[in-house]
Image 1 (cartoon, one colour):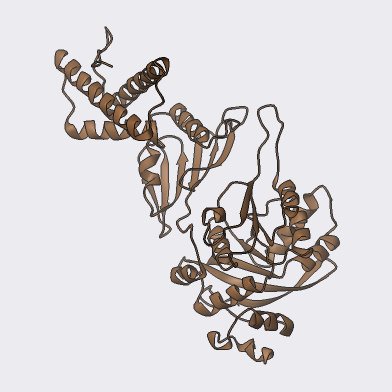
Image 2 (cartoon, rainbow, N blue to C red):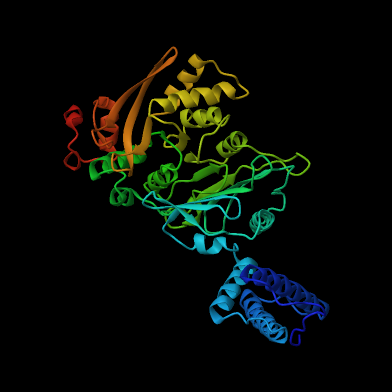
Length: 450
């Protein structure tokens, strides 16, 4: 490949964004041409390192050609700082996630919300929103970026167009992306970051989600194989808490995880969890065939000899097979659900069951839930605006249209969980047998176990 020659009639790019677009298009075209030449010559595809070196060389050539073109037209030559930004933008577009790369590289961000290519808001770990610069030159370019991200997952069936105006996927760094078009005024993109992928109970204490006393109690619940549903609002940390609970599961247990979009990542740690099958729901293909929902995956998971079944989030009909799994020998199972209060978890479970194909009555649903779920752990916000566990309920029984439960931890004056109603004696004895030590806790109901 010789030095680049600009086609006849080409004029210097006008402005930095025009320069980015022009250089990116020319480098991409020449890179594709070079790859074709190598293939025609019987040479193997370049390695990632070699391809990056080729792109660096092509970038230098194209920017050099732009400088010469500007001089020949008597135009101002861009300075080194602009060339550096252009180089970074083109490299990001060809190898990463375009201008999103700089935001994804910022580990302090928890949410990236894009309401059109140039309306970008981010939320940091302190819960503060701020406006950021554009991530694409146009909404059309943003759509192409989303499609490129979808293709990078290796699933060619993940469409994003007017016929399929929403996309839900996991980015390579574990972030969760949701995009919509056509049904909104502009293309919209939301990326949720998981800043604590390897969470533990000790980490929850460090982050202030719970204190040492409550952490010891929750650890005992997991080790005593209690079925737990974690409730809370959007972006309150349910997945992080679920990971922390899973961290307390003995490593030799076989786990089956079921998710709408991969987020838990328990199979990524062969030391903590060497025996994991991770399953993800699948949307229908372009012909509307091949869709597999979480309810079906739960049924499949029960045939895979799991010690525990973990459903990343209960969203619908999977509530019935999940409760069946919990009540037929897979004790110690975990899940999360959206709910504004700990008592509201029962209402959400009932509403999902009512919408399932089985169409269970409220009474039947409550009996099912009471026989399956042992504890509900709820997350909220304390008076300082920090994520905290604010309530823990022990499920006792079902009476008609009501679930009977004891709130063993309730919100205190600052919104954080404080000991409340005593546990049942048999439950407390189970926790002591699982390793909960009386001296670790100051809960007033400890005397019941003696």
